[in-house]
Length: 313
Image (cartoon, rainbow, N blue to C red; front, side, top):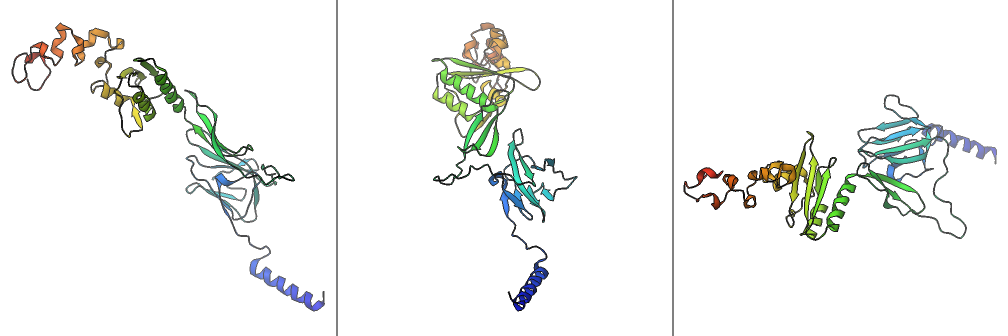
């Protein structure tokens, strides 16, 4: 190269340094946490958005937890917008990611300053490049006392995201299975200390089996047991998705939700029959508690009026 051309090159280089500094800027990229893959490079100016999670993101850089009170590692996290920003001059590689299960699903992201080999299998000669096809699967079934786990997983084993499966799902499925397997004209009895509502799935199961009754014993916050029964063919229909036990008890127990109003051994059997507005009591001495002509009550007159709980008297 001639001295003249070399001089021109030096002048051009100096001009670029004056304009851009001693390093050229690289356009920053905004990533979604769910799209990150192990081994992916994050450089200065890049951002990562954590969306769809109720728990605040937990980010580790070289095995150190990033904390707002002790900012470090060239990382900044805005917990209002749930956006993480990599400071200029820093380069990180995705080491690990997972969604921590619990009442508030929390995204975790581990970063490393050391390059990490991607988890995607390398393409072998004669084979096409692998493309992930993620599908949600339950990898751990819930129990009545413990949540399960669902993952968005590819056939190659890569996991995109995961979410807990509520233990309430196990309770609802258990009740549904009992209704479906009940004998003709039978009554399914459920006792619950942990759960306090049914879903539309249970009502649809009862509607599909109009010969089956559902009796529910449930423990309230004050430590007392309450009971209600959905008679055969009487399951509520509509667009409601959740049915609280207290509301169901109020409806099927005549508006009180108290055990006294239910024909059940828990209530004392026939001893409490007088508390039920129904001809089924057939106890003559308790007739005064029943709206029935057998008591001598004649509508519109005073006859038998003292035996009837009615404002018309």
